[in-house]
Image (cartoon, rainbow, N blue to C red):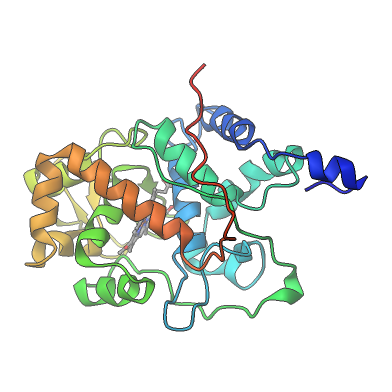
Length: 286
Ligand code: DDH
C-alpha cells in the first residue's frame, strides 16, 4: 500500500483489474516483435519466475521476484526474459504497490490470447537484494534432455505426469530464438493463439532431426515448425503419451487441466495470508 496518512493507507484498495487492463494494453504494441505479440514471452516469464520451486526445501518460486537480481537474471535459461521484465516496468511504475506483476502478466497473457481463465491470487512480496539467498542454477529444464530430466525437474516442484504434459502444452505459444536459447522456430503456425495445436502438431505431423550446426532439435517437412527433444519425449514416453493424445483430441480437457496446473505453478512457494482475497476476476472486456 502507498505511504502517507494512515487513513489513506487504510482506504487503499488495490485495483487488480486496472493492472490487468494495463498488461493487456501492452501485448500488441509492437507489430515487429516476433509474431506481433508480447504474450508468449510474458507467459515464459511467469513460468520461469515460478519454476525454480523446490518442494523439499520450500525454496524458489515466484515469491520475491528474485529474477530481478544476478545471478538468476543472467542464467542461460532466462536469456531473453529481460524483454518481458522491461516491458512490464512502466506498469510497475504506474502501480507501484503491486508485487505480483509477473505472475499476473502470465495469467492475463494466456487469457488475452484466447486461453482459459487462470486462477490467480495476490500474495507475493518483492525481496530486497539482501533479503534472500541466491538459488543454485539448474532448476529450470533443458530442451535437449529426456523424460527422466522432465520428471526430475517437475517432480521437484510437485507435479505429476498429467500436469507436466498440460503445462508443456504452453509451447503452442511463441517461438525459440537462436540468440536466446540456441534453438530456432515456433512449434505451431498460430503462436499468438492459445490452443491445443502443439499437441496436434506433435501427434499428427512428422518430425525428424534438423540438420544444422545448432543444438539438437526436430523439424517438420516444411522446415518451418520445430520440437525440442523434451517435447518429443512427451510422445515417446509411455506414461506421457496418453495425455498428449487426449489433449490433441480434446481442447476443452487441455484448457481445464492447463488452467489448474498453471494456476498451481504460479502459487508455488508463495506464503498466502489467511485473509488473501479469492482469485481476482478476469479482465472485464471493453
Ligand atoms: Fe518453454 N521453452 N520449456 N515452457 N516456453 C521455450 C520457449 C517457451 C522448455 C524450453 C524452452 C515450458 C516448459 C519447457 C514457454 C512456456 C513454457 C524455449 C525457447 C525453450 C528452449 C526460448 C527462446 O529461445 O526464446 C523446456 C525444456 C521445457 C520443459 O519443461 C521440458 C512450460 C512448462 C511453459 C509454461 O508456460 C507453463 C513459452 C510460452 C515459450 C515461448 C517464449 C517466447 O518468447 O516466444
